[in-house]
Image (cartoon, rainbow, N blue to C red; front, side, top):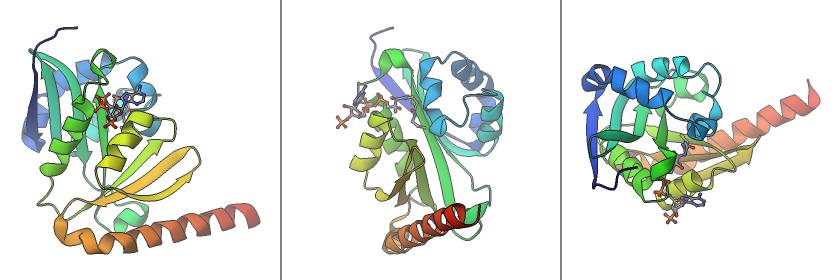
Length: 190
Ligand SMILES: CC(C)(COP(=O)(O)OP(=O)(O)OC[C@H]1O[C@@H](n2cnc3c(N)ncnc32)[C@H](O)[C@@H]1OP(=O)(O)O)[C@@H](O)C(=O)NCCC(=O)NCCS
């Protein structure tokens, strides 16, 4: 681990594609960080699954120690499934190399990513493994609305654009209702 000053850089969709090789080798070099990254959904077939996510990533913030890439925070376009068909809901991911964790880098990556999305009319749905204390702390201090803790995951939501802020409680209610309907169906029909 180097001890230089951490530098942050924001990329748009075009420059993300140009940096693809560097990002891919960073992801391949990750170890235990993979277990909780993106809710753990990527752990198998990794990093191939990430290639698809990268393709739909609209903003990416990278953290460098000297010239070494040590962290990433991305936000990905809507895939149009489930509730996302009706609401503009995006998903995001954040990762900091283990050697650099606990120094505020993950918080700063998330903050820069959110700032870069202020002009986009969208909600960010955050799905975090319930034992991922550092990421839950980041979300809690960043003004996210708690939706539900279920199935090992904690769900939060936040409007990225200030104009959508008044709608957020409504989206929370819709999500909670959907969770309720799903659990009723599971318990009584399946
Ligand atoms: C989640 C992650 C990005 C956080 O990065 P980080 O640089 O360590 O985060 P920060 O240093 O900004 O810390 C964030 C908060 O968690 C706390 N924290 C950090 N490490 C912690 C630990 N091991 N246990 C408990 N709290 C911890 C910090 O004190 C801070 O809380 P505070 O704001 O109240 O002071 C990093 O742990 C990571 O890459 N994990 C693997 C991938 C992942 O799970 N990504 C999130 C889902 S996509």
